[in-house]
Amino acid sequence: MLFPILSDLIKIDDILLIVKNSSATSEIKSNSLNIKQREKWITIGTNDDPAHIHLNSEMIKTVEFFQEEKPDRTSFSVRFFDAKGDRVFAAFFTKMYDENNKLKIARKKLYDNLIHKHGSIIQI
Image 1 (cartoon, rainbow, N blue to C red):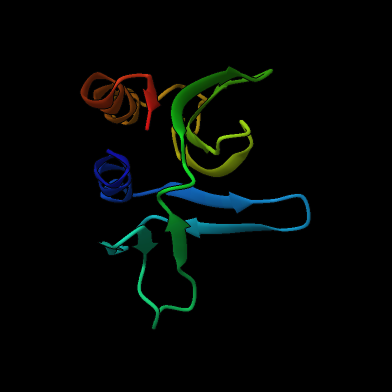
Image 2: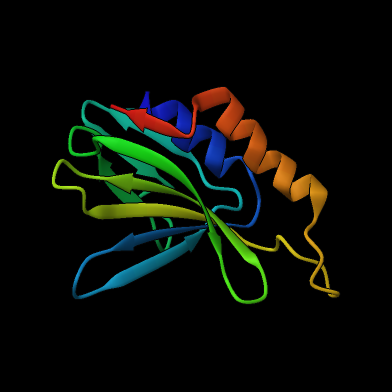
């Protein structure tokens, strides 16, 4: 269930993948990344890339789609939580607005299509 969502996300250009803990944050753009799963580990990118992610699929328990209202725009993301409810991974949709700060309908449709396909909250 987790692998299909991640596969769909990395197919979309300009998704910012973020791994975060209390001491560090790592950010990787989704453009042209590979994905594979071997046992419990999902690898986004390849080991030869300058940056890649190894995600323990057994530790992710919930995936949620978020739309956050900011002062001048809305932020769109998909967030991945562990059993304690801590966010361990996220995918943020970037380049959602044009130069006039208008929402790009085609980008929003990509986000909406993922919700329609997977649901807005997924229990793993």
